[in-house]
Amino acid sequence: MTDVSRTPLTARRNGPLRGRIRVPGDKSISHRALILGAMTVGETSISGLLEGEDVHRTAAAMRALGAQVERGADGIWKVRGVGVGGFAQPHEALDFGNSGTGCRLTLGAVAGSPVTAVFDGDASLRSRPMKRVLDPLLEMGAKALEVADGGRLPLKLQGAAEPFPVVYEPPVASAQLKSAVLLAGLAAPGETTVIEAEATRDHTERMLKHFGAKISVRPTGSNDVGRRIVLQGQPELEAASVVVPADPSSAAFAIVGALIVPESEVILDAVMTNALRTGLFKTLKEMGAQIETLETRDDGGEEIADLRAKFSNLKGVEVPAERAPSMIDEYPVLAVAASFAQGQTIMRGLSELRVKESDRLEATAAMLRANGVDIAIEGDDLIVNGKGVPPAGGGQVATHMDHRIAMSALVMGLATEQPVGVDDVSFVATSFPGFPELMRSLGADLS
Image 1 (cartoon, helix red, strand yellow):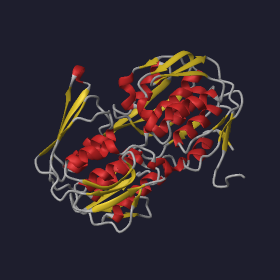
Image 2: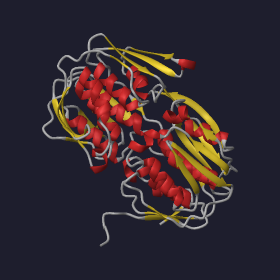
Image 3: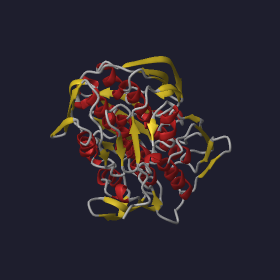
Image 4: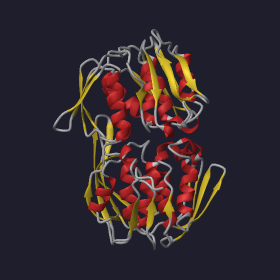
């Protein structure tokens, strides 16, 4: 029997991709703007918010915790906050759907308020690990009253009336884990310190400064690859305007499409170019990609730029494991680019991909295999053997409810010999609402 809830889609060759677009707002910034706006005193204005399902879930959670969150007719969101530690007792479970970021960051925010909340999500989110986020929050005084097997959702968290500051060294490189601790630390007296062995996305630190928190960041460790982050607790965060830049993880799909479809040229406006988010762009340039920066500027503490991408003859490279935190969401679409390159591309240290919306490492390999690409997984490394010509294509890709697998496969199909289909794109709107329409505006054949 056919599952009528699924929305399959197929990508076919259709000539070059051309045009100028702005992809949706950055998801990481959007979640943080809503959460920190809810923890301020006063009204925060947010323009360019990503209006995908994941972010809507975070907005709903902030409302349930007592903040006023409204979207104006002009598309600008207003958040009237309750202050640090001022969340109200929610009457129902906080349902984050498929959003790991929204869930984990809100766990941290709630851990510093004297309320009890049930956290839940869809089947995919329920399968993802939460224990590593819970552990430091419990050290800070929160209590896990109910937790599903293996430290997973659903779970009931009781926030601490007086959280303790901690010095915490995350066991894995994770911006979500770091951010949860810092958000809980806002309500703790004294200093909360996070020591990272590898620097991860620093959007939380930048936005905390933007909202008036006292926070210092300095390099640490061998070759200064780590960070020591010190947050002064119990500030009165001040409402501030936030302009959400275009998401580099979403821009990646149009950029790779332009690189692999002959004669293509695409310009992308206002893309975030924070150095801890541009690992993909750096890697593609090492592969010979023509990616040009047209204009740069700063907004709200984040660097942004207009980018131009043109069709390029790519070559295989080795991507070091230490680059993974700066491009963890972009490996599926990088693997697509590698399948068109001449020679072997080795992507090292991808263990974190195994605990995404799907086992993204296996799902990426299966996507390539289904379309005639010679690939291998060795430990946590993905190896793609490109031939310098378009792969055969012709595969039907199982997406496993993973939006990035779906979009990567469709980009691949724009340049393979035969069309590439995916079994479902209904969940792509969680991160990239309007993806098919925006790609079609550039000339893509998606039907």
